Length: 337
Image (cartoon, rainbow, N blue to C red):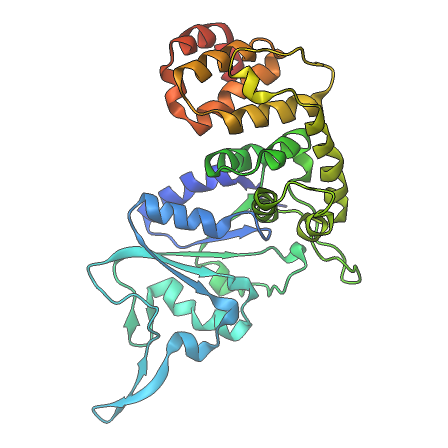
C-alpha cells in the first residue's frame, strides 16, 4: 500500500516535531521540489547550524575517517565536516542518502542509530535529517537496507502549486512563471524523460526558479525558447510560450494603481491569471496603491479578486492594516477560509 504524501508546507511542521523529539527522518521526494531548501529554512528558524553532506559523493572512508596511530593504537580521524563542539546545536543533513552506494549507507548505520561512528560522537544538540529521491524518479537510487530504513521516520513529499506559489511570491519570482503556473498548476512538475530523449529537461519547482532568473535577464521568450525547453522540457515549454503571449493583451497595470480601471474580458482565464500576477508583482504597499488594489479587486470575478488580495498579503502582510481591508474581509472573508 502506498504511503500518503505530504505537502512541502506540511513538511515544515513535521520537521519541527521530529527535531523536538530527536528522531532521525528521511525525506523522500522528486528532484527539484525544495527538500534541501526546506531543511535550510527549518535550521534557520530554530537558530541551528547546518552541515550539508552529499552522501552520493562519499566513500566509506570519507565518513569513518582515515586511520592514525595514537598511543600505539589505531584510531580513526573523523572528517572535518562533522560537528565537534559539544555545546553546539544543529542539523546534520545527509542528502542523497539513497543515491550513495550500499557501502556508504552501511557506514552510517551506527551514526543514525547511536549517533556515533568509530571514535566520533555527534554532539547532543544535533539532529539528523536525511533526504533522497524516489526509486520511480529514474535517478541513481539504491534501495535502503532494511536495518537502516527502520532507524528513521519516513516522509514522502510532493510539490503542489499552492505551496510553491507562496515561495514564488515571497522570493519575487518573475510574474510570467507565477501567472503560468496559476493557469496550469498541473505543469509544476513533469516526469523525467526517457533515456533516449535528446532533451532530458523536465519541469520541477527548481527549474521554474531558474527560468524566473532567465526571464529577469530577458523577457524575449521567442529568442530564449531553446533555454526554456532546456529548463522545463519541451512539452511544458511549448505551453509556457503559448501562455506568455497573453501578456501582450494586458492593460497598463501601472494605470490601475493610478485609479484608471480598464474593462476586462472576464471570459479569458489565462488573461486574468496574468493580470493578477502582474498586479502583485507591481504592488508596492503605499496607501494609494492599496486603495486601488482593493478597488480593482472588486472589478474582477470574485475568484480572481480574492486571489489578488490573498497574493498581495503574501507579498506584504501590512496590507491587512489598510482601512480598505476591513471592509473587504467583511464582504469576502468566507472565500478565504
